[in-house]
Length: 63
Image 1 (tube, rainbow, N blue to C red):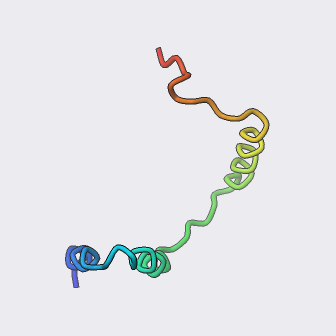
Image 2 (cartoon, rainbow, N blue to C red):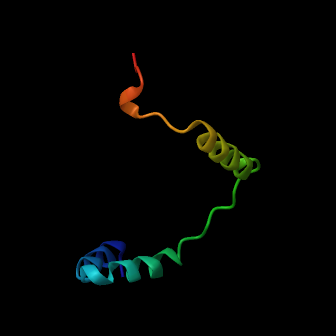
């Protein structure tokens, strides 16, 4: 079976069952092992965002 055939079969899945299909397919995708420092950087970013909040893209002067 080709990936193209699988894509076509997915189109036949009723909308109410797409979430179930997604959960099954995601099981076959290997998880990436975090690089050194990635988890620390994520935690640092979350702390910074909690402390300082975020800025809208529209509020930034991109020039």
